[in-house]
Length: 215
Length: 397
Image (tube, chains in turn brown, cyan):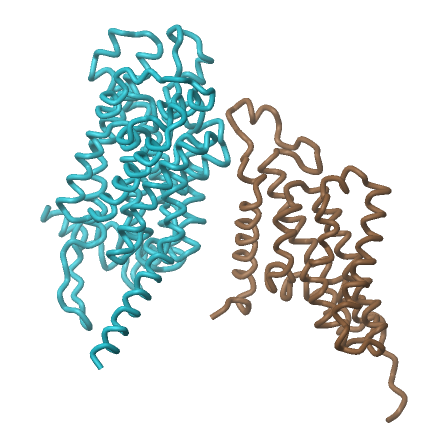
């Protein structure tokens, strides 16, 4: 057993950890995790973006901390330790949001607290961080957070554009179009439409990645 | 006829494998089988083939829809002239019909062009035969829309119904929900002001900004009017000639839903040809009627006290029962299941109407709900049958 060569920080393996959740291994549209919050907070672009950022931070640090602790926790109590770590991080995020973007925090309301129950975070901690070193775990957390965030922002983009005619709160669809008889699609503001959009995203994604089609 | 056949045969090789237009094979196939009953011979399995194939069945339904459509066109004109106080024009039957024809025809054209366009595109890209289901859906969609609905909304809702309601599940015969009702539900939830309230049921009220209307005119459908009276706590409601009007169909409402008699002619055609299930039709009416009777017994406000059979005459109840609930794809398949399915549709529709003031018309949501539940009903009916027969076997032992 010679001295192991130090792996570079952004080796091909680590980069793959970061990028594979964007498409091939996306937590929302491939693993079908975190659907609940994807329906709930995507009526507008801004809260969806803030939610995505929060989840990226929480997944990354939950993975990092659990990976550091992985050899000291008896496996029987690992779930409760995970919950403590994740809950602590979520409370931190919640406090930061309240301090700096109070209006968005109001809009997200209970869903910030519910990040604790977001299946993606628990899933990554269980499936990855407990078996890997801190740095890859951290990268994996960021990657999965971004993968989730991308879908969230995509859904919110369509829902806000078609449902309210705005993007990030600014009017994008000109008044002239409304005068011609165009009307906002109220269904887009209701959560069921988010599910239809997720379905459409999955459809488009599968037609580009044939290997994901289930037999 | 013979010349047409010869022509089709002459151009046929072009569309077959290796031909000039082989890419357009499914399009050609669709037109050929539309014009002529295909000569396909079954080469395995059952050898008896009814010449009444899907396309012929669909045409029967479209024919059955004609009375409701024609009366609907007449009624569009009638309601319009009455609302604007043009008594002379309102008594001119042909004039009313012509006015309505010009209003309704664009909706029908948009619905067919968009729906069939999408169906053709999917059939081409997936390389399968064009499915026939849209022949009926394309006619049903205009009939369940208010006359003043913007045409682009018809297009968007048709596209939604065909793509999300049908194609993603695998095309005709695979859909969970009735496509025409899905289109209506889409407009109802997405563009609520355009399909509910008092301004949309009579042509041109929105565009004229209400000018020139007769004094005291209300464009509300009878159901909305009763619902509002009940919510306001009215002690009594003036029924006037409403039962007779709704029997004939001279009331405001969606284009095809108003006339009970016209719908019943359609029902007679469907039942005579055996296309629709009488079990479903009957049990929908029974469910609605019994629920109405139940509300009569409870009593309380004008809506609950409304004679139970009015429910069957008013709004989209009859139309839904005859043309929507009996859709062979989305309804229950087992015999007992059909009774349960139909009964629940009727009962829930009346329940929604009376109890929920937000939805004066419950038929659409009731049918969609039961569409979703139909496979479950079938499952339990089959399970119960298996259990019963198992028990019989045990006793015999």
